[in-house]
Length: 220
Image 1 (spheres, rainbow, N blue to C red):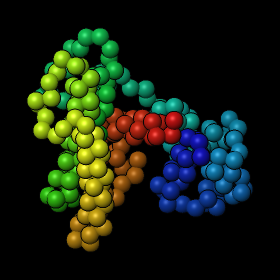
Image 2 (cartoon, helix red, strand yellow; image 1 turned 45 degrees about the horizontal axis):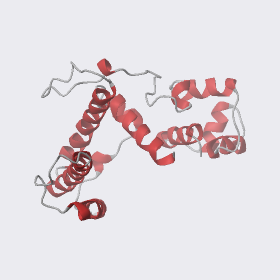
Image 3 (cartoon, rainbow, N blue to C red; image 1 turned 30 degrees about the vertical axis):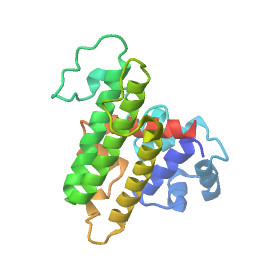
């Protein structure tokens, strides 16, 4: 499944409508729409325009060229900054600042949803997973310079990667187990791309870009 087929399938499912209904609305057969959604056929420009109007999104979004549904291409200045640090003045590459703000936007949405859920254990497990990722990447960077001593860390260098990876896997398992518990309120986790954009106008563009970047890494 390519980006186009994945996105049009997602948009249809977000609206909770069947292939039959979409095909009828757009004036094509259900079989042809199914081929588009499975990536077996490529649509023409006329149909692409109709899809954009039907789902109220840009062609760049449908084609996977941008994570923003309006087709907006973001810059650093478009993203909200973490006011606790002064990252507006940067030197060298703009990429670190851009990525920092993308992640900052994503964390705002993530932790707002956790706050709505109100489960302390779930919040702790998610935070532990994120902290583990930061620790792991930082230690790899730190250890790449042979002048740095390992006195900063308690876990031995030869085992830390394996242990942190195992810990992350366990944390994912714990998070999934918590979310299967009927006592945990999961109603706040009901959302679509449209509702996220509406509820988090400042942060949704950054969040969608993080999702797209992560999936691009996985599918490379």
